Structures are given as C-alpha cells and as structure tokens.
Amino acid sequence: MPRPDTTPDEALIARLRKQIDSIDEKLLALLDSRLEIVAQIGAAKLKSNASIYRPERELAIIDRLSSLPAKHLSKDAIEAIYQEIFAISRNLELPEKVAYLGPVGSYTHQAAESRFGAMSEYLPINTISAVFNALESKQARYGVVPIENNTNGIVGECIDNLANSSVKIIAEIILPIHLSFASQCEHLSQIERIYSKDIAFGQCGAFLHAHNLLNIQQIPVESTAKAAQLATQDPKSAAICSHIAAKLYHLPLMFSHIQDSQGNKTRFVILSDFHNPPSGRDKTSIFARLQGFEKAGTLLRFLESFSRANINLTKIDSRPIRSKNSFDSGFYMDFMGHRDDEKIAKIFEEWGEQIQWLGSYPHIDS
Image (cartoon, rainbow, N blue to C red; front, top):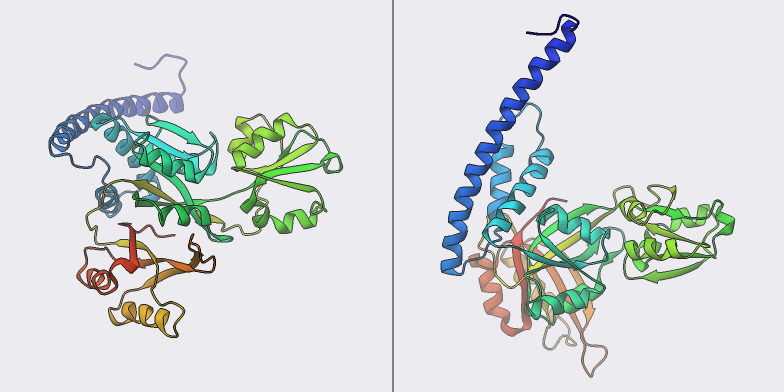
C-alpha cells in the first residue's frame, strides 16, 4: 500500500520500479544461464584447441537480434549491449590479454575496449611494431592497431608490419574520431608547443589556420593520449587529443570537435594467430609483391584477374618494400570475399607466392 502522503505519480513510479526490479532479476538469471552454456562451449573449444574469439559468430548474433521486433532498441544499442556480453563470455571461456597502441586513453584503447570489454587484461604498447612483436612472442593473444583514416589514408607502419609478420587480421573496427584542443593555458597566445600524433595535425589543419596556430611548434608523439599526458606536464603547451584523454589527464578543454571533417573515422584491425571461417559477409586483405612489376602491363594483368572473377576491390595502396633496391614497391589491397571462396582461391593459385594473405574477416559497414 502507498503511504498516505504519496502522490498518484509517485505511486505509479514506485509500481513501475518494482516491475523493473523483477525484470532485472529475470535478466540476471537468464544471463547466468547463458554463461553456463558458454562455459561448456569453452571447455569443448579448449579440448579441440579451437579459437575462443569468433567474430563471424558474434556478427551473426547481432544481425539476427537486430532483425527482431524491438520498440526501443536500435541496432547500435543491441550491439553495444551484446559486445559487453560477448567480452564477459570470452573471458569466462579463457581470460584474454589484448595488446594495443597506447597509452591508456588513446583511440586505439577505446577501439579495443569497444570489442573486448572492461574485463579483459590490456597491455598498452608505445608503437605499432611493438604490438606485432608482443603477438609474435605470445605476450598477448590479440592486438589492436590503426590501419587507416578516411581523411589521412593508410597507416604505413601497420601495413609494413603486416607484410612482414605471421599474424593475421581477424576483425575490423570503425571508430568515429572527434578531436579536441586542450591546454593549461588561459589564452592561445600563451601556447608555445602543440603535442599530438602526426596524423592528427593533418586532420585539424583548418582549425590551426583559423586560430593562427600553424606557426606554433608541432611536436609529433606516439598517440593523442600521450600528447595529453605531455601537455599536462608542460604549462606552455597544448594537445590535440580526445576528450577522454584530456579528462583522464585532467587537461582543460579549450575547443571540441576541431577536426576538419565531422565524418572523420579511423579503421582499426584486430590481430591474432588464427584464421576465421567464412561468415558470408567477408573482406580479405593481401600484400602483393609482383614479379616483373617494372614490365608494362604486369599490374594491369593482376587487376584484370579480379575483374574477370567479379571480385570487388575496395582499396589498393602502394608501399615500398624493404630491400636493397630502394624503389621496389608492393601493393596493399582489400577486396570483398573470403580466401576460402572458390573464385578468390583461384586468384591465390594463379599468382602463388606473389600474394601474401593478411587475413579474411567479417566486413563492417563504415
């Protein structure tokens, strides 16, 4: 019974909250039942040495649930909820250690947590090359690194390491990038240095020009989070960083959303040592070292192989090959489909060792 002094609205809210409490208890019981089944699957996977992380299975679950009627849950909301459930489930099957381009608060850290959740063990590493080394030396099972930005293009260090490593791309993450300008200074005229990742300066050219900051010393560092950390220690400096990094290092924000493109996005890849089965909606990445590339028509013949097979190329980017001949080049390429698809398998058979497979993984719409 409601208290005598309770208003009708307060009584209604109290009844609705009791209903929420009841639903929460049922949800908890159902989640615990789900995790019990997950534990059984994990035990079976360990016996067969199967991979714990199955990005194609997770994508299929989200797609299936998103197709069901839901009045208040968008696909993004469903994905946010279930990515955390997936992360808890994977850690129940086998605790995960994830190396990423750090430090804490970097965009790569955000990308890693969006997929592996709060319960995983994270290993922040200062360079992309060192993330690859951590995977190859088994210090971590998974790695997360940036591979391209839709404003500044390919991350060369990532491609170079993929072309010279045994680890593969097993998944991708698309993360919107919103940059902020943070400083301990009260006025822009007091700033003598700006710290940020090299690529971030290029993404904020219009802002720097508009505020007469182009002639201020620009100091490139490993990450935007590192920039925020350094600016905290340097009273005459500023950082171009995420608002999360600024908050983490207690660096006051002066301007938000300073990137030139409000649609600025970075594509990150998850790396590991296993291969994904086809999901039906896959992307494949390769690095091609074409023999006789200096001869006319070699690249054209290579590309025609994809055209004849009706394979959709989504990216091709030239990269120098580390060799005695400093002008040798290779090609990083993305295309739709899985290596196990018949028409793609024929491409690999035709070109043999000239193609290095970098991974096949579920394609994420950008």
